[in-house]
Image 1 (cartoon, rainbow, N blue to C red):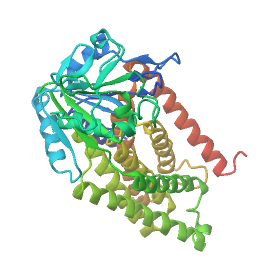
Image 2: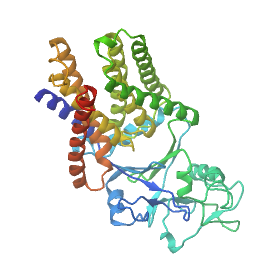
Image 3: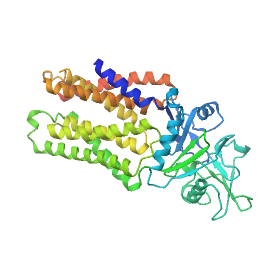
Image 4: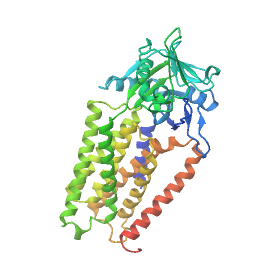
Length: 433
């Protein structure tokens, strides 16, 4: 167990030293064009104010701010001076964006102003709040083809009829409050809530160099539909681990072999497609540890699927499905920090307890595993523990506003995963009904 702890600590440290990230969820308020943040205490959603103490601290400490329909994510500076604060993050992102085959836009000279993310002189800006310029309405150019010097503002303006509705009665009600005028001396456009919440675009702002970028989402509609179907297949494959399919009397059944080969083949294809897609077309990972987590989970998905097909054990095929699900969620959100991180962490926790039980011969049905199988199990427990700690550190912990809450919920999650595994073991071995 000491070796497991050492490997886990070193691995998680290597993934998390580069930078820290925090995400704030956004909500759709159909009575306003301004951004609203989701409330954690169940009260009404709060309007986002860029000059509140919380956001001033976020802006001051961020190397980069990501705004998308997934929420606002702050990428903070390095934990140590060895990494040169924001320089590696910026260089890494530059290389990633240059490697993208899909269209992306970069616009310079966007400066933070009072109650807005940033503004581009008199051409407009990004996400003003209700308090901006002491006005509840924003005036846009009413021309059909306005001349807007900023390519990013012009791009959002060209999509506004779809994302923000037509004259406030189109596809979206999030454009309420936007006023159009033909009498403006200069064409201008403001990016508001509907522009980002109703689109498939990711906006990045670097406060240090006053730079704005927009990047398209990872998948299109059809690819996203296929991904959802594969995720459902993986969920079923994960559940098969608790049907005792690896019992000797079941190995001769053709249906069991079909399941092993089917889920193994799906896992291998999914892992290979994800890796090839990332290498050829590119995935816009913002920080390096997110990309490392993606590749680790995809490679584990392939290796464990091959291993399970070779040994004809559904136990390892289910592991491959779980790691494949990790890579899918990371690909969609470009980060392990996503809404499914809690469920994945719970699945990895239950899985880790099950493997520890099996390694110790405490599975309620057999003697301790032979020495050869014990080494495989020991390696499997180490990998599972590493993935569990990495998912918690990179995916779940950043979603807590107050770090003190994490210690409470982590203790509850640890006990819940242990109790769930114990209950499943007792049912699986017919000790209880």
